[in-house]
Amino acid sequence: MAELDADLVSIQEARSLAVAAKAAQKQFMAADQAQVDRVCQAMVDAIMRDSARLAQLAHDETGYGVAAHKTLKIEFAAKGVWDSIKDTPTVGVLRRDEARGIIEIGWPVGVVVGLTPSTNPNSTAIFKVLISVKARNAIIVAPHPSAARATYEAVRLMAEAGERAGMPKGLVSCMQNSTLQGSQELMKHHATSLILATGGTPMVRAAHSTGKPALGVGPGNVPVYVDRSADVRAAAEAIVNSKSFDCSVICATEQAVVADAPIAAQLRSEMAALGAYWVPPVDKPALERLLFTSSGGMNPAAVGRTPQALAAAAGIKVPQEARILVVDLASVGRDEPLSGEKLTTVLGFYVADGWRAGCERSLELLRYGGDGHSLVIHAREEDVILAFGLEKPAFRILVNTWGTLGAIGATTGVMPSLTLGPGGVGGAVVGDNITVTHLLNIKRVAYPLRPPPAVAYALAPDVRRGGLPGGAPTAGAGAPPTDEQLERIIARVLAQMQNAP
Image 1 (cartoon, one colour):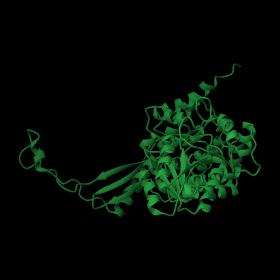
Image 2 (cartoon, helix red, strand yellow):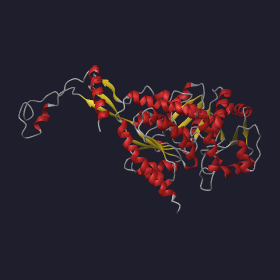
Image 3 (tube, one colour):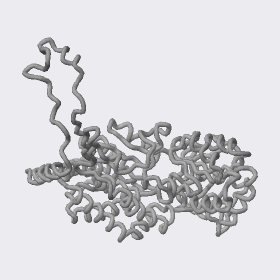
Image 4 (cartoon, one colour):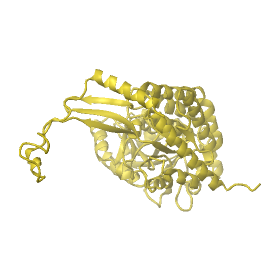
């Protein structure tokens, strides 16, 4: 028997999953809020029971990061995200505004395609499934081929748990035969309503080029400015811990320190004491050749690696106790490759004299592959903090915390998310942390507050003075129904939907 072409198999799988998802989503429209939340809770519980195993699967398949850190990310993507959205109403009447005569009704987007990366594979899939189903959408996850097994296992657990709790089969699914052609077929399929893209720039661009609505991310060349007013020891601890977390595969990880001149020496000393190893200038070219390809892109073989693994691959020596590698840099741009985004345990280090100079250096770094993403500042001077907030083209300004966990909402009050929008400056629709509200459309039932202007009746030649043909103008249906009336109407409509063939 001839072996089937992998691309054709992937394309057919994409078509089959899309059709099944569309049918399941139509069926799920009849679910009430309690049913939706019960399904989501069942999926969260399933992931929490198996988080360590899923983390190890992701580490074993990709070779990236630290399994224990991936466990934390998976649990954040499940329980942390669910806790942030579980009380958000998404079904039926969401709000009533009597003063404006408006009733707002939740409505799903439809079928979501969730593109997931190799760096945070199953955690990103878990997050996307939850925010999609909470809004009564179907979702098909299209995993990165190098992390397809780990991603599929997480989605399989969620789908089976959700179906046991009453979710229609096919509402949550994941491609097992993942190829570029299959993913493109899935994104362009007539059943697909929206693409939720997390991953590298080429993949996000492909999502935006399909003609379908897309929510995407951008690269995160995140600067961290340490001001002379900062608690330098605390800043050093945050930077080293954040940069070493899961070997720096979260896109909001610090990529370059910009140290205020008066505290630069102390910051170096404090970071070194915590496991930061300064790479000698003679070894810098070897590190550059390892981290980046000849075209300037990141080398996948260097992503998410420990300092010791990087050293072995680059042919240099580093201490066994090194947690991150730090390289002194003097400029930003193509002539300084390590000034770009590095999703591994390598950190640039600049010195700037004063916050204005630090501001300019941070702007350079953001413009060189990080526009709109994130910036970290360590300072106790509020004027400096606010200046950075006002001036920087970054939609997450994180103060005195980790870049990794701060940007995703684990240590800050921003919305918990594993898809971080870079806004218009970064080529995306929004600069938000993507969550359930971005996958929920709102219908508005609007009651009249005032009559139309009298001049409107003079526009048609057969309109007689005093009103429209056939009678006088009316004020409409009157005031919106009361809460009690609404509850009875909703119950009646949902019962009809559930009993429909």
